[in-house]
Length: 343
Image (cartoon, rainbow, N blue to C red):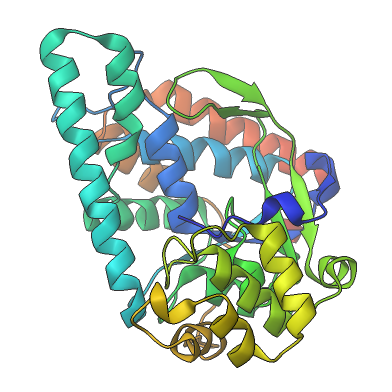
């Protein structure tokens, strides 16, 4: 879902060139879901191979990763581990929404209503265990490292960014800021466009950089207050937030009460909306498990593995894969040398 606070955040429009020769920590589930919902046929159905297996996630991952590599941008992908106990309610809610959307899509399919099919198609995308395993295989073949988080990918990515492993966390959602990510990169795409909700048309977009400390200063709040603000609006651990409280009203409340959260949540009538105490949600953010046991090491792409996975198993055009990898090698050699890139 992602916490809905970007309207009150200061965002800097940047160019992809501003990220060249930097390392970004990528929120893998966020990006893979983006590929599954946007890379689709004209009727809204996902792309599949000859055996009917979805390939939209692989198309997106291969295209974006190699494009970013051509710009000298190192990537480390972080995958989810065990979700926090409080997230199970949100997971069940999402499952129900997907089932409803799939039912509407099936009705539209039977009627041959292409517009309705487009509307509902991306709403029931599912990132399966097999898809995640394939994505990891593709990253390995590209020489891109990945990390399995003990819990939330965004929390692990923020932890790594705080330690200086990467320049920023790349995600469409602002949740990594709640876990202390110093910088958040949104719209990290070479294409400069984003799919409009409920359609297969696109709008022009540009990469955005959000700086945590700058925003805390601009808003006049602390990191703890930012978490409390988002809890009022709604997070994955208390979906929906408190009725009638949007980002601006939430900001007013946290600034007025400072860090007296007991009084603030009492005034906001937290207990009338949620069964869990506010401390339980707050502590989920501040005490979420992360790890330092990972190896962010890049290696040379293995073209044989790439062709075996993409072409041999999923019917990608071998010429396209060959052309992409040849162009990548030439571009990197011209920029800084492959030896430097894969240190």
